[in-house]
Image (tube, helix red, strand yellow):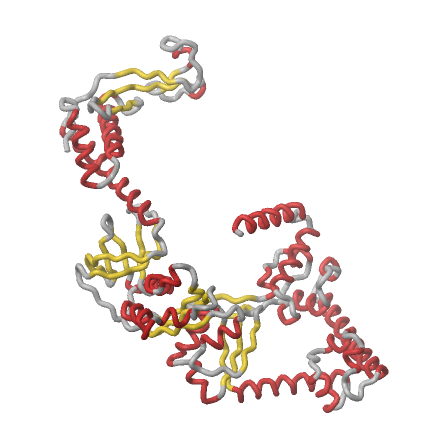
Length: 536
């Protein structure tokens, strides 16, 4: 593609041919030609000159100009492309900083090397335009399914033809048993589109939960129309899956609509996913109820939800345990993904034994600390009392409802409990002071003596130390490693401090120390409210 000034129309003809072949804007090709001609002119006139080229879009005539910019005296560095105000007076009327002097210069003939360089510039620009076009075309199609042809396989990854460009179906995004040959037509889910130096990378998937959801949308008109919504999907690709569906029309059964007449709709999805078994479950806002549905076909006796820890305990009859867990834990794993909760499954016998152990532990606590006989301690536990604080500080009426407890007995119980608590508080505070705790931390509102002792034993001895703590260090939390959730114990977690309370205490400490301005917090809260209103 040698470009010469002799044949001006050839520039436009070349630009149109390249643009037509690559399906891009001819103007982009012309701009690339202008840049390449300007580069060739600089090699002739001097690289320090600001040479620009403009190609007439109708005639193809290339105009070469030299541009000089007016700058301050002290900023003058390049005499070939800049000039001072005083110098500019020779060429311009009343010049000022920022004005430009444009002079036409003779066009240059492009030799073989210059032409080759120009060709490289144009090809590079064309490639960039193609990449931009491909990115713009696919960035808005993330989350959709497309039908593509297989081009080749590279190290287990499948390269598909997107016309123009290519997409990648990575090895871990394929359903296990699938094997493809060139020119096979497959349906894939556009998972991500990224700009990268070598061009846009389009990542595809057949294992993503969203792929199954989109397949159901294609097969079930009610989902496409919004009458039925898929609320959650969990997959073990190629083996089994669970989806939670809800209907916004009381006359339409969401499970029946997704199954279809004689299973026709769900079977179409199963066939596309290489025989993956699909459990369709009615969604319920009440998590325990939804989980009972999700664990089908196993029968559940009891569910206990711990929202703070995002865990749920499920009690099943002994004969239902293996069915609830599933082969290699598949059933309970999918139910966990579907609900977003960690699930502990136990038999009725195990749950009964645990409850009995807890009952005995609390009974012994009251017997040892309050000097009660076993029967009386068991009465307290049966009424729901779990610790000394509850006995010491509840309304006296809550104690007198227990058979055999009158006002005097209740008062004696509370007095004993308070004496023991005060003794423990004094011991904890004395121990904390031995460890070097400062008064600033002792006086901080919200920290009990036991909390202060726990902090001191971990090296937190001043208000400054406390203010640098992270909320999860105090309240504990959960982290995921290698796909498994692990518990991080918090310093104050045994004392009933949750994440929200920890955040509030740490922020209060920072405000008291002057590290944070309360006014800034109010601004942040206002902005958050505004953002939520906009999203709503």
